[in-house]
Image 1 (cartoon, rainbow, N blue to C red):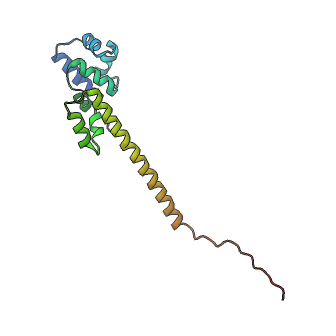
Image 2: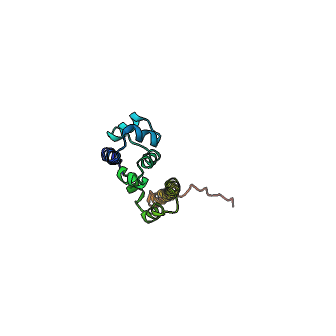
Length: 148
């Protein structure tokens, strides 16, 4: 799992805000977040969710994908299946919100499949241990005595 690069993300957001000549208050208002929360994100104190990053990206008029990359979210998503995620994120015919939904659904399917594989591997290991374990003894049988 990729770690969130909070301080570099905050620095990047601050750089983008300053280059756009937007005040902290203006960006907070346009992004729909509070001033203190945005300030904490910029200072690396808070870890914003993908949804908040999307709102900030909208307020800065940059792609949410850019912020996801700086946050380390996109790198996480690219582990296996990166071509699918990249294709969805690159598609200009759908909006950022729909892209995130598609990627989230795709990732949930991948996680479900991985969980099923893990259970199957565990069951296989369990069967292997039983087969190579101690030799099973035959159940006790009684001999029937017959009268002559």
